[in-house]
Image (cartoon, rainbow, N blue to C red; front, side, top):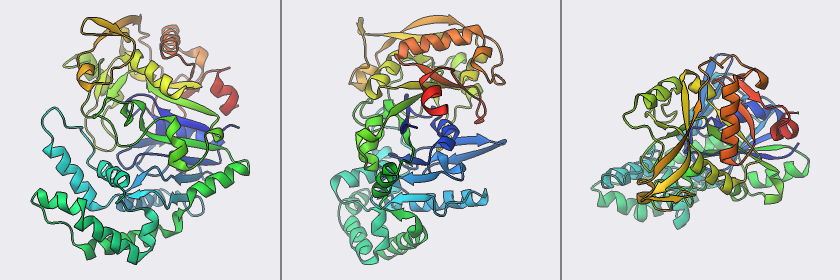
Amino acid sequence: MPNIAVVGAQWGDEGKGKIVDLLSDRFDVVARFQGGPNAGHTVTFDGKRHALHHVASGVFRPDTRCVIGNGTVIDPRTLLQEIESLRSADVGLDGRFFISDRAHVILPLMTRLDALTESAAEEGRRIGTTQRGVGPTYEAKAARWGLRMGDLLDRDELRRLVGCMLDGAAGQRLRAAGEAPANLDELVDAAWDHGQQLRPYIADTAMLLNQWIDEGADVLFEGAQGTLLDLDHGYYPFVTSSSTLAGSLCSGLGIAPTCVHGTLGIFKAYATRVGSGPMPTELIDDPLGDLIRERGKEFGTTTGRPRRCGWFDGIAARYSNRLNRFDGVCISLMDVLDAFDELHICVGYRLDGKTIETPPASAAAGDRIEPVYETLPGWATDTTGVRHWEDLPENARRYLDRLGEVIGAEVSMIGVGPDREQSIVKPGSWLASEVVA
């Protein structure tokens, strides 16, 4: 079986967790390669809903090894709470859970810096971050004054590094905002304690992954946020702080591109976004947008904030495919559209009276886009109980065929509900032949 990447293809919240969970029983390893506790992956099975923020979504398969890679950022306190929650659900981690010693650590002062930065931004320029300290931690990593998971295991080095943070950039920014930096001893003691609890899981995961791949293990690579939030390719500055593309998994896990054999892109059957930034197809003050939000339960797993909702954006989807080159795509939450008599797909952009074929680099220009829609008939039929492709309503299959044409990639799978069993793989598709067979 090939090693496959699962990548969010929109603005996040596409249902990656469900798909990773569904596929992970066919893989030996599931590895997260970017993001932090700002990610919220939801897995539902046996009538129970589980929310994950750090741990890879394959954790519920008892024979699957789970890796948090070096490209992630980790809040040890949140991670320990997540581990305890998994233990309470009788999910064992010993011997199959691994955290990169090179992943960067989110300290409490990073969370405070995140909140200060967001509140200080002028109206209309606030990113709408989760304020979990993710951005400042990636910033510290790039500026080379960050703290890594391996540093939590060396008390003297830990104290030196945290002291440099408080005396340097982090402490200066807090003092400039009128706040006293945290107490050095308290920060070090807490971080050391967290490190001791996590010590059994901290390892050189790049070495382990390469060793497992050389031994013939099959690996499922799990992204956190969506492609359209990529630091380079999203509507900057309304983006996340890491690269979300399939290509970034190589640096985020320490493996070669030749180890990646395919990419599955996850799209919702419509569009959603949390936070600020352009969203051309958003249904603002529109009862149809409210209906999508209500039926899709479109509230953030991490923040609980209501998501912005709109029609499927085919231009952004084609752009996402161009950046990732999907071998197949999954269309999730198809059942949310069961209540609509007609559906709209954005198949073109007009900007300042001119037709454009790709999202502009400028967020200001993105806000001026006028979407061009194509209308298709809905199916007005409950699909939540459908388990076979041929049993889908004709108009639902027609909608999926058109999405595949607009995206430029084969629709290999759909979701018709939150449970792992409410998933349908298209017979004869890439996913059916390469992964599910």
